[in-house]
Picture 1 (cartoon, rainbow, N blue to C red):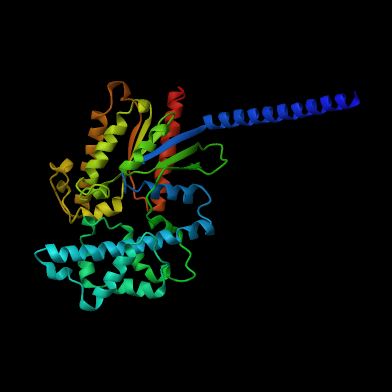
Picture 2: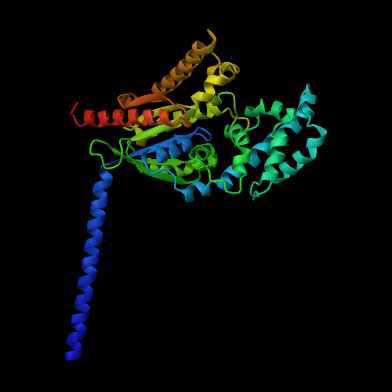
Length: 384
């Protein structure tokens, strides 16, 4: 009898503990749900190579603790891969141009560099790249300085050579050092395609400050095969930040070399605007890579892109840069209003000129975004 009572008391105590645990879990879920209601959800969208992921890394540097040494070191293989990929693209591009161009001789490697070129091209074709050593860096530097490679680099936009290629070539020996730890700037230049979804929580005025909103920013892969992963993120979004690389008006997609990147950005922006779940969602358009645009526009006419066929140059220098930028900005504004249903015209739409690699500019831009969204929240609450 005593044993039966003891067993009954044991099970009773066990049930009480389970109930207490269940109640604690419920309490935490309720707290998290309440906290989530005060977090504004931002979706970072755009085509591949638009600079989204660089913006994302800047947010981590600006409004969080940045990258610790372990995270910095994790970028070493990425940066080494970027170096090998760049030199392979340039070597293979020079060989193709030497065979197909009328002035082919200027794309022919010097005799002493052909063997180095073939070796580096083979390394660049591997699935796993070797660690960059001082010896390999010297060979890469030798090939990089060959006049044929420099002539090829002048046409880098035709070869899918990443913009970061020049930066890494200029820093080869530092990157190849046995004790190399990437700098924050190295990490910003490092190119690795976003796959799946990554997120970060931040406040543009600093954590735990009462006056600041808290945001959760989601970055997703921009390439076409990644876009199916976007859909489940579309609900409950405060604002869509759409990145368009305005310097890419003369370049083709990595995944489809017959498709102009600017035309892809145009069509993608139009498609996103027409999604029914975004009827009340604010749209913030980042016209990104302005630093590259202002250099390119003085050499490559804007009307090489079909969308900008009606563009007419009016000046030179800074005036031409501003004129071209305003033309592109107007094209996106027109597209926004053409693609927005009449009952959605009062949703917020803002355009920002950005350069993802410029930390001060990104900081200033997100302070403006924060102020704009807070004012919008107050307006919707009838407080403005």
